[in-house]
Image (cartoon, rainbow, N blue to C red; front, top):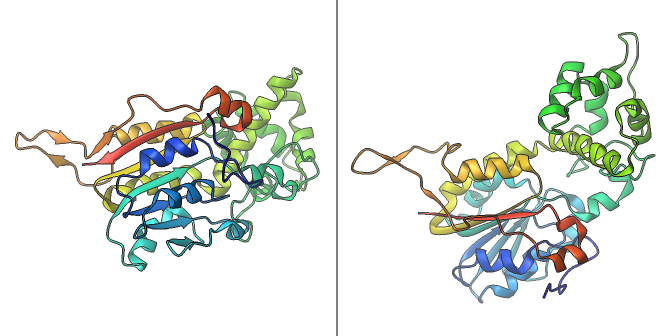
Amino acid sequence: MYDLENNTTYHLPVLRIEAVEALISDPNGIYVDATMGGAGHTQTILQALGPRGVLYSFDRDPDAIANVPKDDRCVFIASNFRHISQWMAYYGVAHVDGILADLGVSSHHFDTADRGFSFRYEEALPDMRMNNRSGVTAADILNTYSEEALADLFYYYGELRDARKIASLLVGKSTDVRSYKTLSEVINRIEPTLPANAQQRRKKLSQLFQALRIEVNDELGALRTLLSSSERLLAPEGRIVILTYHSLEDRIVKDWGKGKDNTEDVLHSVYGLSKNPIEALTRKPILPSEEEIRVNSRARSAKMRVYKVS
């Protein structure tokens, strides 16, 4: 049965029990929650750890600080998980026994109007920064990127076939001055490309907003860095559990697991054959149950993959 214990209004952690069971091999080991958010996974990991276990929890969103568990075994790091290697070195940690990364955007972000993540709040500023105290906003991108750059962004990150038409509408004529200040201005400008069907309209806007969010936060670059760093950080037999929510993330994780994107030196057997140090522990992704999806509809697109380093 789907267990709601430890969930908060900040975010419902997806596959909470399954992820932690896959992660923990030694209750007194060292672990990393790369995306603390509402601390649902963090709290469950702490419950599974022994008295000598240690958990480092990352989150770059200043709002997440309020969710840090009051537990001496938990060390909170207010930073992007892409810097995991540097922070582990800072704390003198050479290897960890497991890393958990839930790549989904928290409900807190979608449901807080002034964060600008959701097109439900049309009068909100196009922001979309995970850390809203630094970096470029979605408005900066919409107001400064060239038509070609916007088209590439919507095509590759949003997988929108009419990306060039959308970009052309957003840029307008060469004499136009772009100054998008609300989400409604963006939506109204691309209205000719939006389907009349409400469901299809929501899907297309979701793809557009996904593209902007990925660019604002360099989400795919951060993921690649985390995966690469995990090869050095994970102890032998150490595990990494990754929850993805769209095909772009999932493809990167799958390719990494197959050795296609490994940036480490390639290992070779005595016969000169290349050897991938990453072993998949899940032949197919683990999906949320129908009961969990009923309770938390945002879990519907989640896929969990588990790997270990040999």
